[in-house]
Image (cartoon, rainbow, N blue to C red):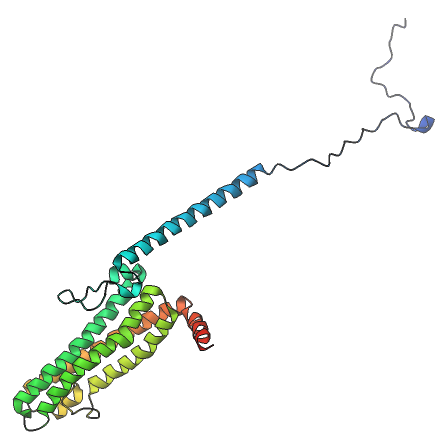
Length: 273
């Protein structure tokens, strides 16, 4: 044996392409399985959870709707046949803003109700002013006529205000009806114009002292005491007009922001067809 062995780290002088082929053998191809499937168990579980959540939400809404229907049946059937509860001493209408109107619209509805009551008080104050005018020297002139006409205005105009603009607004706030909103805007603009007319109170439709406005306070009142009542009436009508303008702005802002304008147009077109 040779004393010195060959270097194990020495490179061999071998031609890999000699002999017509390589010494390296290729890896065998991996088998292709056509029946292999991707594991989607996680995505299926997530979809199942979503479906269960939607089902629970629908069940909750169904229960709420059933409770509302039961409440309507207990109250007397349809929504339009609710129990009369206002005014408390002699109920003639149904009026329950706290339970009928959504909470985000209750402030506007309360102010609108205040304008309705304020308008009724303005008309009542005109009766007081006309009576003071009649007692303080208006008997021989237009005093009696002014009192009668002011009472007639109170009896006729206040119910008209309720049916023309307050009830449509209440129904619109309660049911979110676009057509009710449209009817309210038309009649409420007329109401504001009437309040402006009453604050001036020109002797056009009635005798000059019928409505407590600025012109009767200057022209028809014969002393400072009578003028005081008509000036107070003028101030009341001005305050009423300003509050009505605020309500109109707030309702219009909600109407436009909720997209009720286009809905009212579509409903009007369907009704016309």
